[in-house]
Length: 92
Image (tube, rainbow, N blue to C red; front, top):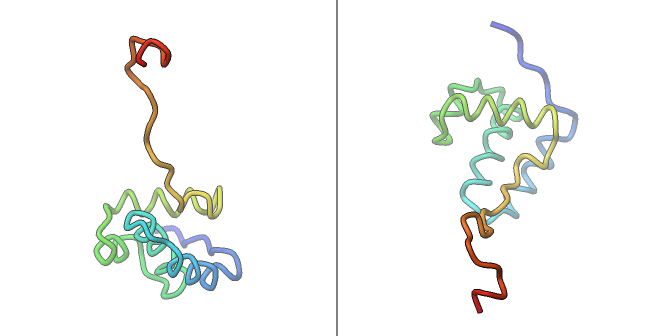
């Protein structure tokens, strides 16, 4: 098994602040998945059991965090007019 790539210095402290600020359960779990690895050195399988995410989801979050940083922890809401037949003016 390959050794884990370390997170940058200060990651643990920043994640502790984010855990206190977030109000979304899904974002909280994503932050926890990084926090438990940076703070306690848990493996992805241990984190998946504790946090309640699938193993592959935890691995994906770790990989994305190493590539893109903190932006992967914040989820964007769904929405929009996907299947539409009328323009906005015609609907009114």
